[in-house]
Image 1 (cartoon, helix red, strand yellow):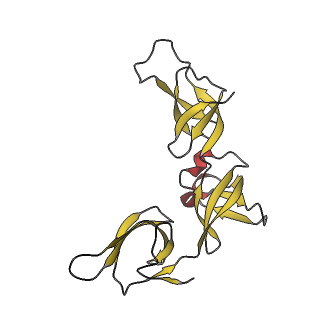
Image 2 (cartoon, rainbow, N blue to C red):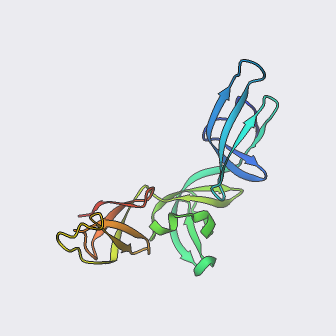
Image 3 (spheres, one colour):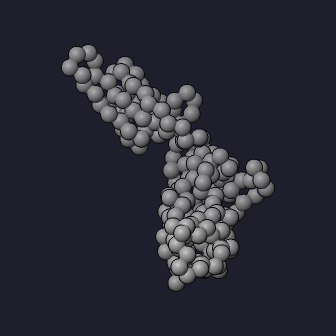
Length: 192
């Protein structure tokens, strides 16, 4: 890939920093009254999610990362415990990729099979997975709601078929299918 100079660093660009792929989440060009202009960037590590700030002078440059976001369908899980791997298949090429628990982040909580996800590939390996914004999952376990019991804020915990636990309103019962916002991990609505 190419080199990115002071004028090329923009929000959303992926760069190599200390050997890892990072994404630029903020970029601010600063031209002080005295001295040289510089760009201040906030970057997030695509492998572990850490963020940091960097300051670029006009002579600095970064190598552009060969990290690509692509759509892939979640197929199945292989292995158990921390040795699990999630298998994804690209729709166009039918090529399969494996994602580790670290690459999955919290996305594993929302996947049961055949969901269309956005995966970030770096050197042919999945380093990050984004679950669909909304998923529909069945409640496998929750306490029955008692009429008039609003002392707990009007909600109760519910375990979903994937093992994730979300807070749901008192009127939602076991074996119902609910819609969950995967970005916040919160109940959205019941599915008819």
